[in-house]
Image (cartoon, rainbow, N blue to C red; front, top):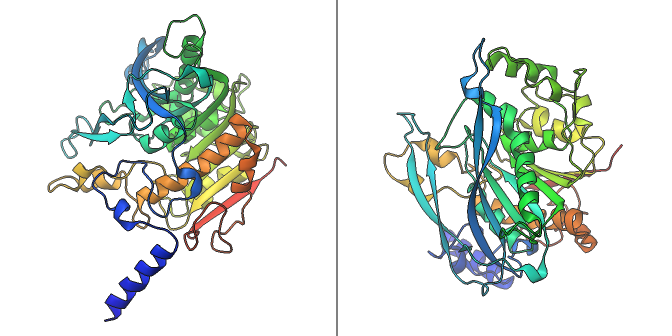
Length: 432
């Protein structure tokens, strides 16, 4: 009887505030679709979304995979990106199928398992030039990961008038794993190389589909985990001496990282004036000594951090929160999911990860033990819409969505439905 009454009351409350439970349970649910309790700004924007795959070659780069004590070879670094953009196609024109993989290539305990999933974009659709040029968002996955890891977000932002470019970082994907030292060295450099490539093809005379579509002078970098580590460096955060020693140790004693170590006499910050804001989901490194207080002061552009206060990969108190406190020269925000661990950024777990005989790590690569990943996705869509709208589009009316009480339970946050503003904190601070 109590069980029946509880279900009745729950259904009454949901119907009273306009929820539709059937939609959330629909077999047609696609990553990034709205749950009934999604906050206001999570809804897709006015544009249909096109998507294309492009591969670029960055010549004459360090082949860190092959470094030895007496050898530092070079190679052409092949970088594949997925590009989502506003399209002139009829809104809701169709679905595309993304092909990804879970597991780790070459690991007999976690063999590579290809899988497919749908997205709400149209492959090779014509770009919608009359409304452009659009700001640029570059997205960097974790270690290991893929360019599709945050498709719920990339598609959503493209529908709101952004060109979104997600990177497959070489030697750092499920399909192409490599030495961790390659990721330590290349993350920020890959981000800025992709920015240069987009700028090249955005030129009005390039003949590319990007021609006239992108305003690279309004760029944001978004990264998750090791991607967050990279975007901080790309935005001007100098690395610590400890990280320099770590890279040298695993790169055959090479000092290739020296000019990015804040305290080194040859230090050169990687700041780029085209980058106007950064977003770092669960950024790695502080807990492991990659950053120090002086190096983090190099970031002066607006920064939005997302953290789980139980993060057991990047850490919280001595990890993401310490980064937030160290970014003292930046206008900064930190969204905290209470009782969440590290997976505050990716798509929900693939259906294929539920199958019998699949290693449990494939599910846990995406899932949160307490939170529904789909709800996290909607909340991320909401807050990044506000943050990027303010700092890339000067949509100052969105500031009220970030001017909130720290604790989500103390009052209903702007844009959240009644009784759904719970389990989060939003910290914000100005440059000191």
